[in-house]
Each structure stands twice: as C-alpha cells, then as structure tokens.
Length: 134
Image (cartoon, rainbow, N blue to C red; front, side):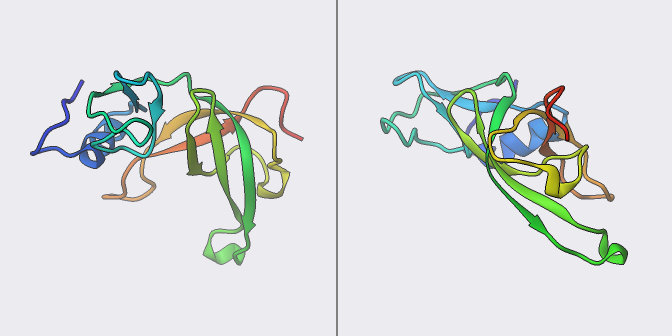
C-alpha cells in the first residue's frame, strides 16, 4: 500500500489508489476514528498517525439532488452525500437507477469507476444495495 509522505501527499496517495482500483480512507491510530477527505492531520484529535484502510463501502444516502441536463449534454444525473458506515461523509453519485429514484435513507455500496475519457481520474461511485431500486 502506498505510504504517505512529503513526495506523495494524501490527495495524491488517494488518487493513485483509486487509479489502481482501490478505495481507501484514512484511520487515525490515536483516536481510532475514520477520516475522509484525505488529510495530514486527524480533524478529530490533531494526531498525525493516519493509516489507509479499506472501508466496508456500504453507507446511507444523506442528501440527494438531481442535476438536469439536455439529453445531448449527457442527460440528468444525481449528486449525493453518503454517510459511510465507518462514520465519514462523501460526495458522489448513485448509478444504476434513474437520478430521481435516489432517496434519502437509501442503502448504497461503493465501487471505483474508471474515468470516462482518457486522462480523467477514477472516482468512487455508489450503487443501490440489492432491493433498494424502485
């Protein structure tokens, strides 16, 4: 697993892991809390003993919004805030269902999606947990 250091700050380490198909978040060895977005210092206790860990990836939609676009511009899509079971919140999108079908409280599962075009970075997206789609 990549090590965090001066040459590779936490944002770069995170992006490199996503590019390799790995979703990781940080975990503070001092206060034992999970951390996201990647940082050098724990926002909970101020400690600097942050390790990378693989989250379960399941979570709950906290908030959702549909962005409307013309079909020729790619069509509608959603933006969500997801509370991971590890206690961190992420912004992303839910795929696999119509944007307007995403609901607050919906259970979702994370996966790494490659960039859609050459040079676009990989990112974490969510899929509904089985039985959640309507």
